[in-house]
Amino acid sequence: MAARLSLKPLLTYSPINRFTLAALAFLGRLAGRQRPPRSVAVEHIELAGRPTELVMAKGPTGGSTDTAVLYLHGGAFISCSPGTHRPITASLAKGLGVPVFALDYRQLPQGGVGTSVHDAFEAYLELLGERGYRHVVVAGDSAGGFLTVKVAELAATNDVARPTALALLSPLLDLDLGTRADRTSRHDAYLPMRQLEVLGPMFDWGPIPFTGARRAADIDPTVFPPTIVITAQDEMVEPDSIELAGRLATAGRDLDLHSYPWQVHAFTVPLRHREGRESVGLVVDFLADAIAAAHRVSADGADSSTVEAV
Image (tube, rainbow, N blue to C red; front, side, top):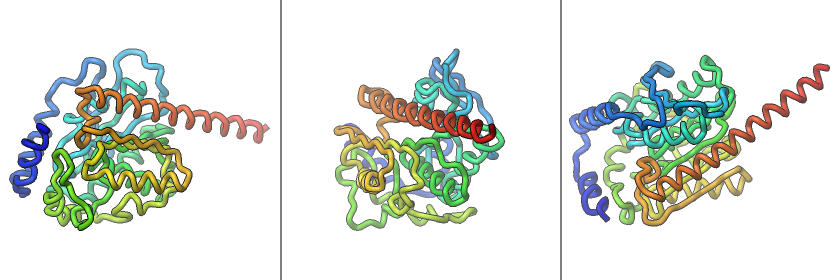
């Protein structure tokens, strides 16, 4: 109710222009100055030429050394940063015992969604190639959820090893949602449809053109690895998650979908209440199982190769 009465009017009627975009970028950088949770260490590095936060649990973890998480933050392609999403990246690093790379990809007005997708995929390629990780989980919330499914799509298109698993948290899965006459944000706690109508044309800004599917439901289901989706019931983007889940389930893909009533968009990220912590626990358990399954497959393949060689 607090979000509906305060945040939603603010987001609905605030103008979107270069001044506000610059202000949002400044606030994102400011958030990055806060201290990280005590349970993790944060190192500032470059990944595929972009600033990135490498988040690692302190002390022994027992996690796999050949596995990493690429985290893509949300913010409607105009705001937020790795610093604003440290609660979720720290929880993933601690829960999975593997390094989490939170990418500071280019956003408006620096670049349109095609540029954001390019940065995300290049980061994924570097983790698999130069950095030598055999298994990479890709996770993201809101706009970062859209980038997450695009990484899976591009991996298939470019004949690259697909992600080990995907985690989609209140994902934006339709780039043209703002033009959908059959959709409304009336029941959403704070996301306004009218601002997506304004942002829509900006999504196609360069310098790198957008390619491929604009809706996650249009991507071939077979390119999806094990996928978990967390949504808030009745949030504006939930119908697209349900549609994607239906397509993946029909195709026999490994899928978990959880919808929480009385929650707000991307409620998993802050972790400040019971449902937020519970949803992150579901994500960690799902991803841990997917990572373990991937390692079993790798071990079986190695055994088979050894037998054939002999």
